[in-house]
Amino acid sequence: MPPVLPVETTPREEKRSENLAKDFVKWCFSFGAAYRNSPDIINLRTWLGKTNMKLKDAEENDVLIEARRLYLKRVDQMMKKTDAPILAPETAPVEMPE
Image 1 (cartoon, rainbow, N blue to C red):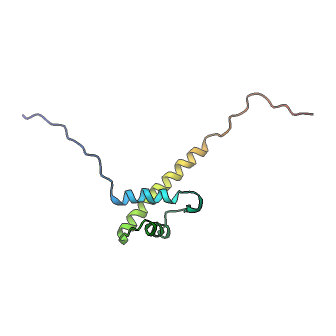
Image 2: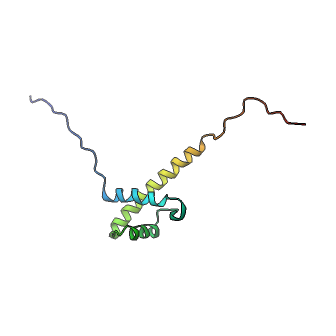
């Protein structure tokens, strides 16, 4: 019986739409004058124009789906950070001046 060789797993290659979605979400989250609040089709087409890229309709759809998933994930992470208490409760009682 021949020895069983371990199966080598190759890391999953990211699709082009996934890479574009990451870059697009970064652009959506940029603050200041460049702030865009959501990964919608208008913002995607504006971003594509600024980066001089063109996508087919199917590719736009794939990028939007992935961008919305990443966007919601990022919003969720931000919300979890705000759930943590910002100020520690005072341990000593505060005396009021008379």
